[in-house]
Amino acid sequence: MNTRSWIFTTLVAALFSVPLQAAEAARSVGLKTFAEGFVSPSAMVPIQGGSMLVADQAGTIHVVNKDGKRTDPPFLDVRPRLTKLNEGFDERGLLGLALHPKFSENKKFFVVYSAPRRASAPPDWDHTMRLSQFTANADGASAKPDSEKVILEIDKPYFNHNGGTIAFGPDNYLYFAVGDGGNGNDQDEKDKPRGRPAEGNGQNLQTLLGKILRIDIDKGDPYSVPQDNPFVGKEALPEIWAYGLRNPWRISFDRSGDRELFAADVGQDGFEEVDIIKKGGNYGWRIKEGFHCFNLADTRKPLAECPDKGTNGDPLIDPILEYKNFKAFPRAKDAQGISITGGYVYRGKELSGWQGRYIFADWSRAWVKPDGVLFAATKGGDGKWSWERIIPSTHAEGLAFYITGFGEDAEGELYLLTNGGNSVSGNTGKVIKIVPN
Image 1 (cartoon, rainbow, N blue to C red):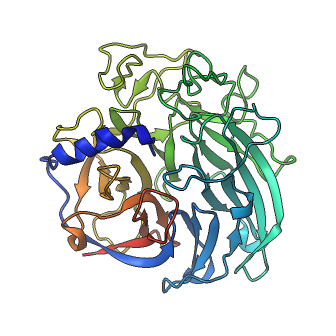
Image 2 (image 1 turned 90 degrees about the vertical axis):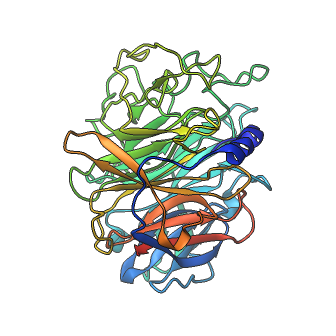
Image 3 (image 1 turned 45 degrees about the horizontal axis):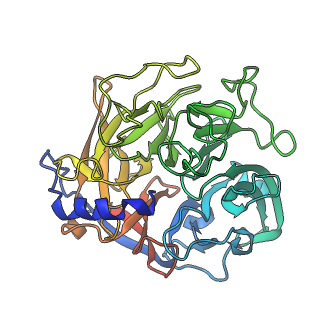
């Protein structure tokens, strides 16, 4: 998500933008409300019997049964553990949820949330992002609130660019997406230096900010680092799996095929991108944004040239796809939104012909108006990816909500996590299933 300074420019973009003129996906899907009454749902995972656990950014996790009924009281309530959230827009809160691969046996699950700044953090920093383990009760319908085990804490200089997705990979290790620390351009405010390195956090291997991390939560205390992590034994933090990211807003593993790890990285002003994350990969931020050379002096005008390697000597890896952001391209026909939201590769059975397509979204085409956009990306025979906009038959006039994330059920069917406002307040948050037309 992006900061309040965007309000004016994104409003102008919304007023003057034109629809995409390229071929758009056939209206072969619809959207159906599955569950509602949330503030701003941030993550969803399946549990036994077709039920779901839905995490709400405001700080609660609820069980939702297969009929969409939300149970009360919450499965877990971490609101007393959160830092104080803004009354309006905020990127902090309860951001990640993942079940242990053996959850049915050990009842362990993991959450990421924004805790108050810990005492060891610099006094002018904003908060501490905390990865914790909890244990559910034997029936799996509620958690033990006193079972928290803090696994990892990352101090954040600003309130934004947190990332926060956690997911277990096919290797049963936990992957953790972390934003670059916040503010803009991977820089500190000029009058408020907060220790950011000259090259930015994304390119610096001595910080966990701007990275994808990979840890083993079944060994060590509170965790261990897998010895095949790419930077083990080097002048770098060993938890790092990949780097050069700005604000990876939702990562997911393909549950089939090559089990690839997809990450949607929110851009600064010009381009939104999707990456396939590889071991040790450098994804370019802040040298590049999307396929383009980032211009620190004028973020809306890419440079003609830039290095093809980072400060550590690793080659920069381009995304598999990008689209233009309204902030830099308010009148462009191929500008699609202002903040990408990552999704999943579809592996369900209900949507005929959609197998293997990566379904993702943009949070909204405008800051002040809920106007999310849905996309599908397809890998061609030549290995290149193309994407198209999806216009659901049930919402031909547009999606009147912000798309905060995606969920995947046990059968591989997909759900949108949405909010009717751009703040962590109210009860307009919904879980919406993508269904056949």
